[in-house]
Length: 110
Length: 113
Image 1: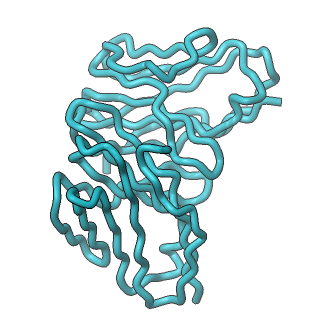
Image 2 (image 1 turned 90 degrees about the vertical axis):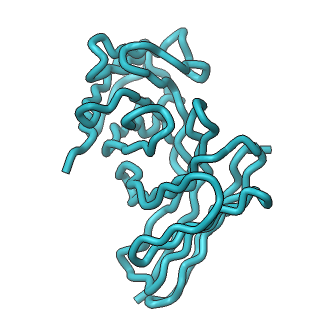
C-alpha cells in the first residue's frame, strides 16, 4: 500500500462547477501538506501549502486538512477550462522527504 | 518572479550513453531536490541536498546515477550508462529550507532509445 493514495480520475466537470479533490495517507507523522497543479509536459506548480490541520483559502482554491482522518482535500470554485490539469497532493513529516500522490487528472468542459 | 531553471528541456539519448541534467535553484534556497516522474505517476525523490551535502539518496540507483551540488548552489544529475527504463521526466525543485514548500522547475524530459 502506498503512503499517499489519490484517485487517478479523470474527473470531468462542467465549467463553473466545484472541483473536489482528495488524498488519503497512512503516515500519522505527516504535518506539512501541499497541492500542486501540473499541466502536460510541464513541472508541478505549487497551489497551496498548509501546516497541520485546518482550512486555508486562496482565491478560488480551498485546502482542508483533517489529520484525525488522515485525509486532505482541495476545492476549486468556479472552475474554468484552464483548470484542466493533473493535481498532485504532497506531504511530509518534519525533517523528512516530500511524498507525492499519483495525481488526479481533471477535465473542465466548456 | 524567481524560478527554478533546468536544462535541457528535452533530451534523446541512446542506451548505454551518458546524459547529464543541470538545475539552478531559486536564489537563497538551501534545499535542492531531484525527482523522477514516470508518465501517469507522481514524482519520486531521487536525491535531496541541504546546501552541498546529500541528506537523502536512498532511492538513487547509485550504480548508474550520480548527483552533485559542489558550491551549494546549482546541481548536476548524471546517468551513465542510460537504460531504456530511465525514460521519464526529471524534475528539480528547491525550498528555502527543508520543511518549507518546494518549487519546481519545468523538468527535463528524457527519452532513451
